[in-house]
Length: 421
Image 1 (spheres, helix red, strand yellow):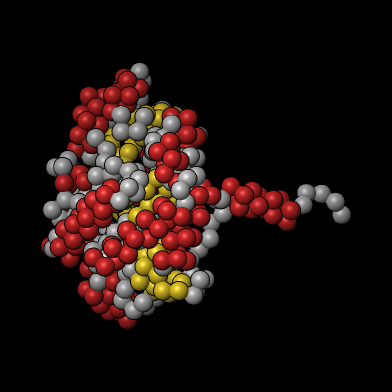
Image 2 (cartoon, rainbow, N blue to C red; image 1 turned 180 degrees about the vertical axis):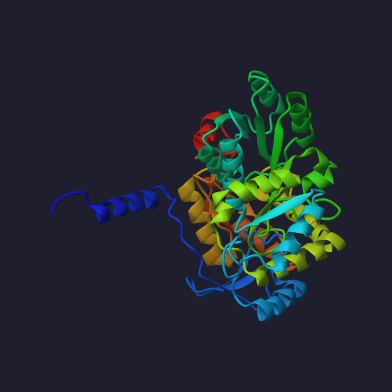
C-alpha cells in the first residue's frame, strides 16, 4: 500500500530540528535529597549544579512545604478523585483559593492545573463570550496567552513590547462601545524586564478597558507579601484580573486567576480547561498553602534571591559575559544562534557540571537565542564562583560567541510578530 509516509515525515522533521540546533535534549536528573540545586545527571553520569530552575525561591524543598504535603497525602491520598465539579473539590482547594484572593486583594480566585491552562482557559473564555471583544496583547506575551487569545476567536491587536504609547494609539482607534481587554505580563520571563503597569492602567481607565496581567514570574518574589510586581508598585487594585502560577515562586505546580466574584465565577462557569480537568492533588495544594503562608510572613528568601542575582550579574558584567540589562531576578545571557547556544550549554554541562538549558525558537525569536540563568537563595558563593569560571571557560572556548551576541541583543518587530502570528 502506498500513501503518506508518516514515519519518514517525523524523521525528516526531527532531522531539520537537529540541523538547526533546536532539537531538545532532556537532562536525566536525580535530585539530591532535599536539594533544589544539586543533582546527578544520568545522561552524562555526573553531579551537576542547576542554574536554570523555575523554583526561584527553592520553596519546593522547604521543610514547611514538605511537612504540609506529607500530612495531606496521608489524609487525602494521592489524587483529587475527579474534576472540581465531580468530587474533586477538597477543603484544601477552597482554602487556597481564599488565601490567593486575599494575597492579591481580590474578592475571589480559581485554581487550574497549570499556569498555561489558566491563561488559555481564562483568555479564551473572556474573548469568546464578551460580544465584539478586542484583545490588545503585548508583543512578547507568553505562548499560553497567545493560545488563549487565538482560541477565543476575538479580534487581536498586538502592541509593541512595553510601549504604552503604541498601545494607546491602537486602542484609541477602536469603537468606544466595544469591550476591550489589555493583557500583558508584569515580569517577562525571557528578557527579565518589567511592564509599565501604571501607564497601562491609566490607558485602561481612559478607554474603559479590562486589564489582565500575568504575574507568573513575580508572585512570591516581589512585594512585601510576595503578591508580585503589582503589589510592589501599589497597583493591585487597578488590575481587573491577575493570573499567577504555583510552580515557580511557590515551588509546586498549578495556576490561578484572581478578580471580582463575578469575573472569577464567569471563568469557572465557562472555561473548558477548568471544567474538564481533574483537580490538583490535595497534598500539592496543602504544600502550596504552606509556601504561600511562609512567603507572606517572611521575606528572607526574596532578599536572599535579590542579593544573589545582583552579585552574579555584577560579576558577569565584570568578566565580559553578555548578560542582558534585566532589572529582575532573571539573568538572560545573549548567544544569538541556536546551534551555538546548544554547544555552549553542552560545554558547560560536560566540562564544569553547570546545567543551563539553551533557550531557542519558538520560545524566543530566531537570532536571539540565549542562556537563561536563574539564581536561587540556595546557591552559595562557591557555586557562584564556579559558574563565573565556567562561563569564562565557555567564552574562551567559543570566541565567535560575543560578536554574535552583540548583533543579536534585541528583538526585531518582524520576529516578535512571527511569535504572535
